[in-house]
Length: 341
Ligand SMILES: [Fe+2]
Figure (cartoon, rainbow, N blue to C red):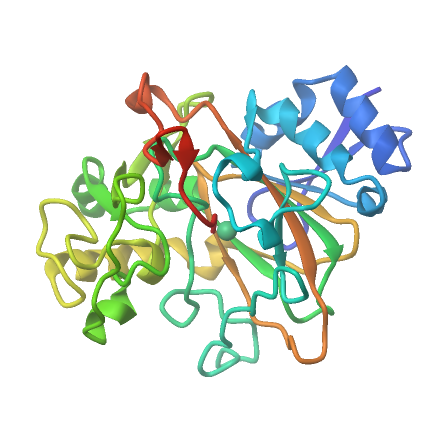
């Protein structure tokens, strides 16, 4: 059985993949297990973004998602072991983190951008018009490698898209002077809701006390991929960087400092429409993304009118030589830090 790989439509990166002669998710997962290197190799050849369609049998057999996840690394996060609030964890498959506006997760979507559309009527993607660009759990060291994101109940078309930005192409397109500024730069990341986000600092909020397993973590702004050697921009924006001691180590701190100005410059560059793919979800779509090489952002949907239920798994274990031998920063006496983003 072989894997058909096609360029992703309406995107400058990523691939649409399908195992030949498979019709159901059960068959696709069985084929992937027979050729365990096929999907990871396709992922790495596609700047870290794959789309599989027609996987809706996962709704009835969610363990298929965990099985598929294991092909991407040895360590698929078990959310029962990471102190994640139980209403965000699938009742039968603890490797599945629930992103949904319906009970028991009950999480609202992000706010609509202001204005809601671009001047030519399109979906805003570029920072700072579009906010909440991030890479999953970047406030942990080592950070996770790969996420799988599955649409059990998607929002209607035109709402609730997921945006992906190609950190490899964006790094390659940096001017020489900006490249030299970011090559050894270190970002300071913190978990959302810590009172250290840009808006929280501007509002003079009192930062939350953070336990030893919740401390802000330093990450290189340019990651070197451990498999391909490709360099990619790695940073978040307002809500997942530390705007008290950062956003960058060794630069002027705070929302009006030199670090903030540089972050705005990099993020605006990285999220140009030419580097961004906006995924409109169909039920049964599965997107596989490499957190080491791309950023993503959720978009608004009308949560009063529509239910949306998405399932995510997270794979750890190959962050690159920079993290070799490190203890997990979020481990505390055998327990671990809270809510994943
Ligand atoms: Fe995310």
